[in-house]
Length: 446
Image (cartoon, rainbow, N blue to C red; front, side):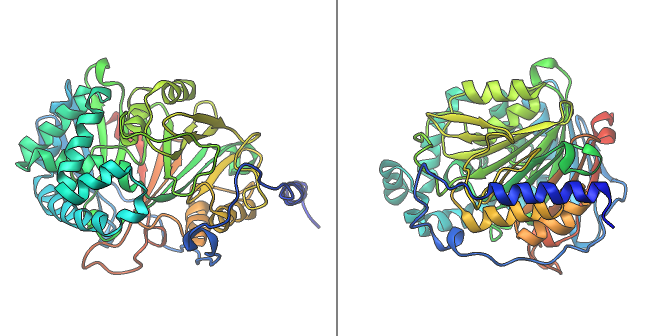
């Protein structure tokens, strides 16, 4: 006999199957690359136990404390920085992670220089910018790009990068150049925001799966930074998931229980607007949301008003309100979606009650449908643990790192790709996740 709850979820599944009969009108999906058109393979459940060990104190300096979390080959640096200025943040960070910064940034810079030159034809950059890279070098191009975005970027961001460079004694220009790379490379990623009936107990959950370059060595030095502003001009406490020397936000949660996700779009359609290299880089748009926005409405208003740059899909979830939004993002257009109007609406990307989601790109049928199926298969029972076991690993998304946010209980789960000389699976979604209780970390005093 089926229980009433089981019958309810079977009904939801039937409703969603019927709904998939809709077709997608705005643009043809012909001529997509093999990445999005043909990948229908599925992965295996991630059966690794989640590491729940306590942070281990490593070092302490003025305005900063360094811990390690995780175990074995899946350890992560957990750094707390405190300050009245961005420079305070950066100097503490650079002091505590000097060795790691020197090992990862020069290697990453060398790798990306060659990688971008080798793949210029696939990046769809403006011809004038491509010519600068070819004729004068990537360093000159990124320095020029930095000049284009400076007037839109908070001065405290540059102060933080300067403090990081001064303390770690690394070239400041390498730091700024690496923070411009996201606008060029973007990455293929996946996200969801789930709430209400789709999750166990009605929790608000969010996925940020980062599918980016695993050959640059970034995963050798994964870092979760907890920011503790000592003045309101620097916003409120937030957690940023990245690598040694990187202060932009791709993955993170705020102390006000907002979460952020992002997908670079390589396959847009005619519902997107145009792009620009002049505006606030998206890694700082996302950081602003975590650092300064108090509500979901604050975040959406900021996205609407900011000078945007490239084609993206953003996800913002709010654990206080118990909901999430997906944003279609470009320089000239922005559209906000919930579970009732989610786009693109197609048989390979149906709407799901109490969910927004996107798999790997905008027009990416096989990847979108795999994520849809994984959510539907777990509908009504989804927890962070179940998502780790049966969603990201089955869909095979999040090769560089994965963040799963419990925005109801303020807990984050993080995994990173296999580092150099480490053992086990390569992709983050197949590796051990580390549980971080942000209630404790946001309240931690120096």
